[in-house]
Length: 496
Image (cartoon, rainbow, N blue to C red; front, side, top):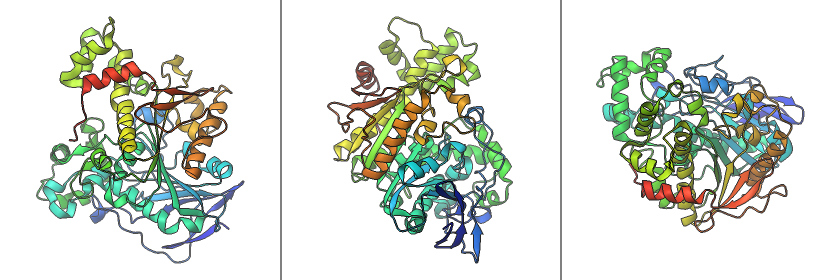
C-alpha cells in the first residue's frame, strides 16, 4: 500500500522493486516571511491525497567545489525546504527499526535527497525504515539574533537543530504508519550531520526522540558561544545594512541576498549555538552530566579526514615555508610551536603534517572525547576508523572525509560515486561489511556481525577500534603515541 495516513493528511508514494518510497513529506510549515529565523511550526493539514513521488527542494545554499565533487545537486532550491523522505519494506504493523539520516555539509550545504542517501538497500537488505531530512542551513538555520531581538529570536541560532527535532517528532508521531517502530529510532549522520547529533545528545527538546546514535566524522565539540555567535550576527547584519533594532526587515529580504552575504564569514562560522535557551550548556558538558546516558553510540572517523579540504584549497598550491607556518599558526594559535615540536620529528612543517594534525584536532580527538564521556556514564559505545584509500586524483585524497558514505549506504552504483571512490570491485567487499554493521546496530544496538572480527565495546583502558578496510581488523588504541602527544599538548577540554 503506497497511500499512508499521517497526522496532517494522506500521502501517496511509489513502489520501487522491493521497497516503498515517499518523498517530500512536509514535517513543518514553510519557514518563510514571519517564520524566518523562528522555531519550526507543525505543518498545515491537507485534504485529499498528497503526491509524495518527488523530492522537495534543497535548502538555499551557495555552490561549493567540494560539495559539487561529492555530487551535491543544487538544481532545485527553495526556502520552503522542511520536508523528509521515507523508505520502507511495507506500510504495515511490523514495527521495524527506524534509521533517521542527518546530512552533512558544514552546516551550509547538502540535502537529504542526494543519490548517495538512497535508503532502498537499508530497507530491502536490513528490513529497516529509513528517513532522510532537510533542515535550514547557513544564515537561515544558525543566525543568532537573540542579543538584538530578545525573546522573539531567543533560539534563532539553532533553527537548523530545532528543524531536526521537529523531524524527529514527526517520526515519533507518524512512522508506525510506515511500518516503523517509534520506540527503536537510530539517528545517524556524517560531518555536520554527526556534529548535529552531538548537539542533539545534549539538547533538552530532543530527549526521548531517539534511542541510538551513529556519528560519522563528527562529535559534540562544534558549537559557538552566544558571544561569538552574536559577533558573527552583528557582522552579517551590518553587511545586510539591517539595524539590530529593526530585525523584521530580515523577513522581507530576498533569500539570495541572505545566502550571498553569509559567504563573507569564515567556514563553520554559522552553526549551533549555546544560546542558554534551546541549548542551555555545551553539549559535551551536558553529556558529561548524563544527558545521553541511555543512548548507545557508534562513532568513528576517517584516517585522512583533512585531505579533501587541503586538496581543494588553492592556497596550498604554491605555499612556501613561510606561508605553511602561517597556516599552522592560524589553525593552532599560540599552541602551534608546541604542536610542531611534538609532531615534526625532524621534518619541516608541511601539508602532510598539517592534514594529519587538522584531522586529529577537528575529528579524531573530539570523537574520542565524546566516546569517553559516554563510557563514564555507563553507556555502550563502539568506535571505528575508516582506512580504505581511494585511488582517484592520483591517490591524493587517501581515506578522506565523506569517503565512507557510499560504503555505509551501499550506494556505490549511484551517480558521481565512481568520481570519488574509483571503480575497483574490491569496494563492494568493504560496503558489505559497513552496511551490515550499521543495520545490526540499528536492529540490535550493537554493530557486531559475522563478517567482522570480534568488536568489543570501547572503554578508556583498551580503546578497542575496528579499522574498516577490504579486510577489517580490530586494534586496541590505534596510533597510541600520537594520542598521548596530542593530549599532552592540548591539555584538558574547556567548554566555551
